[in-house]
Image (spheres, rainbow, N blue to C red):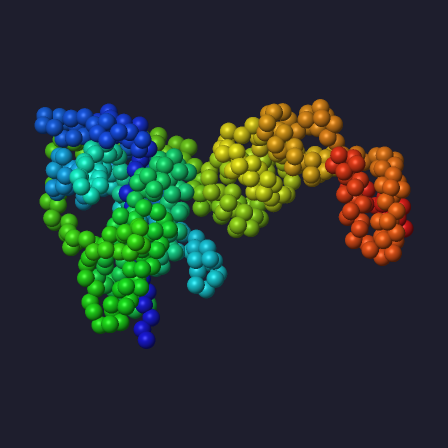
Amino acid sequence: MTAYEAVIGLETHIQLNTLTKIFCACKADSWEDAPNSNICPVCTGLPGVLPVLNERVVEKAVLLAEAMHAEVQPVSYFDRKNYFYPDLPKGYQISQFDMPIALGGSLELPIPAAADPQGKGYVRTVRIHKLHIEEDAGKTKNDGRERQVDFNRCGVPLVEMVTEPDLRTADEAAQYLIRLRQLLRWIGISEADMEKGNLRCDANVSIRPAGATYLNEKTEIKNVNSIDSVREAIRKEIERQTHEVEEGHAIKAWTLEWDQDAGVLRKMRSKETEADYRYFREPDLLPLHISAEWKAAILAGFPERPLERRARFMREYSLPEYDADILTLERALSEYFEAAVKAYGGDPKKVSNWLMNDVLRMVNEQGLNPAEMRLTPQHLAELLKLVDAGTINITTGKALLQLVQDSGKAPAQLVEEQGLAQVRDDAAIRAVCQKIIADSPNEVAAYRGGKETLMGWFVGQVMREMKGKADAKLAKDVLAGLLK
Ligand SMILES: [Zn+2]
């Protein structure tokens, strides 16, 4: 039996988070607004008006191109993509066609062990074909009885980014979207929320005998609005095509629509070819010139990319992949970690543990942003040093995180003010141990009779008596001596 491999390319539409639309001053984000409340003669295409390009759109597109290692073109052009649809009042969409803003690029995509049939994990290189700027169309809502057209989204800025057909599995496609979403938020150009439609994805899927280099006829999957759905839709389409081919049927170039509720793909209109759009240069806009100076100004302070930072954390701080992955989920968190490591000067893995287990729990429970926390990276470092020095024990240290977050005071100050320092006074601990032994004749007898696991209970009693501040190791040593 022939083994098949899938060949998948993704087209993503990324809504840029500019305040205003691409060619007019209307508000761009209408997610919570009433239909047709953010429109004007420009974005609804009334006669006699001219589009004016929003420079913020160009800047954000250049940032994305840089993030993808794509080559920004010194000159690009706007074109009209002509088609008729009720949500497109102008009868055309301003887009870019043969001379887009950026070409090429790639993403080195780490595929986790869980998504690898061999269970090891690997890297998939996904090449980028091109990035272009365009305006969004409106939206039609169909409630079954009547159709309502909402033009709020007309003129909302988008970047369309097209990959080469380099992805091989549904899981790889999902990983691509996960990493793209991370990257878009990292460089601050899009909210990248698929549920809200500001990251949209169409997938082109075909299959061929494993190892072949030619491309077979492909289908296009549209209308998928979550990463899980993209994975599921592609998986189903690969299964369908494999079945068709094994039955001796040819694959037809269908456009398929994902039905979220039913979890099935349905056939849409037969695929239009690009010629149908009768592209021509947009006569109302000048060519887009991006000078070397402008590009340099946009890219000044361009951050280390998330996957590069992830790799560096593993290399420089000897962190496991798991830690590096979590600590670079968000840029603010990665910066928090690195600032804490620098202030602490000790083992980075220890900082990672405290951050991932305790600080992140607090962040998640209380809906905080790491960048806005009152518990600063310097506070965390100071707290760890107090634990290392034995000034406080770990239990106190964990409680102290919340105290610092609530008060904004430095850990050492709180230890001083609230008397949280660990009791390491041998005599004080000995006195408490003696009292507990005197009060617990049954446990003492059992312990001396061989039930040594009771040591934990004795230590617990000491800690309780001393309000958690005893040096547990010292208490254990003293108890062991007394119980001999
Ligand atoms: Zn407008």
